[in-house]
Amino acid sequence: MLKIDHLSASYKTIDGNVHVVKDVNFTIRDNEIFGIAGESGCGKSTLLKTLYDIIEFPLEIDHGKVILSGMKNGKSFCFESGSIRRSWWNHISYVPQAAQSVLNPIVRLKDQFLDSIPKESKEETSAQTLQRVAKYMEGLGLSPDVLDAFPFQLSGGMRQRAVIALATFMSPNVVLADEPTTALDVVVQRGILMMLMDLQKKFRNTLIIVSHDMGVHYQITDRMGIMYSGSFVELGPTEDIFEDPIHPYTKMLIGALPRVGDKSQKVGIPGRPPALKNPPPGCRFAARCPQATDKCRQDPPPEFREIRPGRFAACHYLKSEVN
Ligand SMILES: Nc1ncnc2c1ncn2[C@@H]1O[C@H](COP(=O)(O)OP(=O)(O)O)[C@@H](O)[C@H]1O
Ligand SMILES: [Mg+2]
Image (cartoon, rainbow, N blue to C red; front, side, top):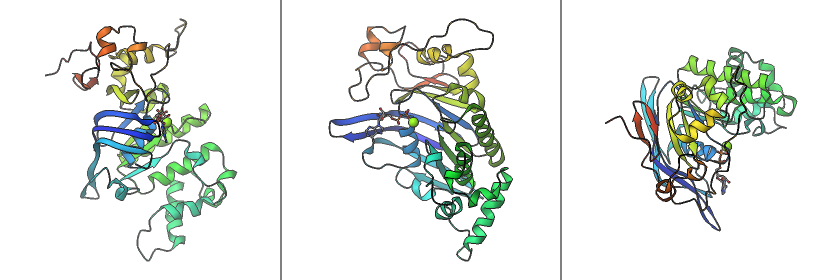
């Protein structure tokens, strides 16, 4: 289980702090595919960095923490922000945004694997480690020859598969993937999504996938959260959200998606998210929300809360039906 406990984080800049993650509070369960959606710049990648505990200047946690706990091979574990690093590879792993380009193009893949993967025992030789990697890759339908290649010799899709293979090699409890299909063409995207889904089924672990593309969430996630300007505005089972979104922003996002057989003109959401540096005092979506009132423009929305069983949102005009 990954618990994000009232987490706020900001970038320290010479012109002041940019609050990019604002009071994010929710729990991701074991054995689920959880999606994080939202327009570019809303803080998805920053949130993922805090989950993976890459808190490096100028990023700082201002409030709250992340707790990673669970069981692996009959042993329980618990790590918090600050110590999650110790669980990298074994309990949690990360496929960063533009992962295809994080590989050093002129170092053979096998050497990059050897640099990253801990040995099974002190006695294990590099050749033996590579044998394990090759076997694992074969199991994923990837030719072990890829290990001898330089990344520049591989297609973007193949590089992405290699990075995913590396991230999942030690069967971590949680895999984080940031925009894993962005910048790949549609056919390759489909293959990468299938690979991620198959791996999650096989290991029964937790996959957290960040994408600005709602289609990706529709295709593979069990539950999803929608971020707007640093906070979650809605969270729930993906199917329910697509069928019956409750927050005005989610309604607009889903209303803007094309549907088979629907010939009506689709419009994007007018306007842009507010600057994170000087956000408006009230609801950050107010300026674009068709239902906004003066109250929305002046007062921040009530805390993100359960509106219906399993359905969370933050909006002045949503009443909780759950006590
Ligand atoms: N190193 C940094 N210093 C200052 N601001 C940053 C830095 N990295 C990202 N940001 C700002 O944080 C905001 C959120 O970025 P990001 O988390 O990458 O969003 P997303 O992944 O949703 O596109 C953006 O407005 C971006 O300009
Ligand atoms: Mg991003």
